[in-house]
Image 1 (cartoon, rainbow, N blue to C red):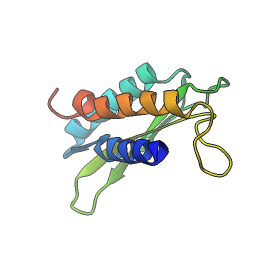
Image 2: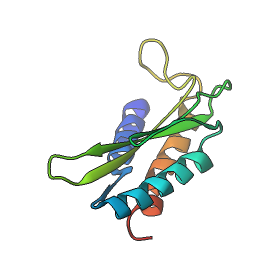
Image 3: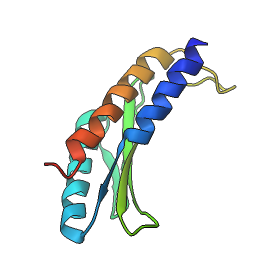
Image 4: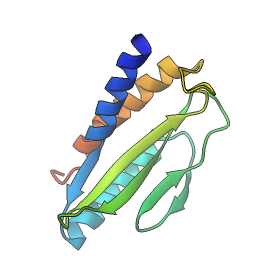
Length: 123
């Protein structure tokens, strides 16, 4: 039961870990803030950076969060920037909680809850 509740909280945090922008300048600024956010919250350096993806390398250590951001064009013409994250060892092979689940879930929730506030257009 605790695992399901934690997964529901993580899913809610994932849904809120996004920002919308309109126009090239606003989106370029938000994308730059997303890059900085990913750098500051990942234990590994950025490995891939292009117009639509900011991706860090998976850490060698278990239980350490790493993040990536995706920029997508929404149906309404707005651009959406989403944060994704994971930890090695977070899930077992059957999809249940792995041995690092609790600490990983807390790291991911915290970062995902901060993302919209730190990256959003309000800056």
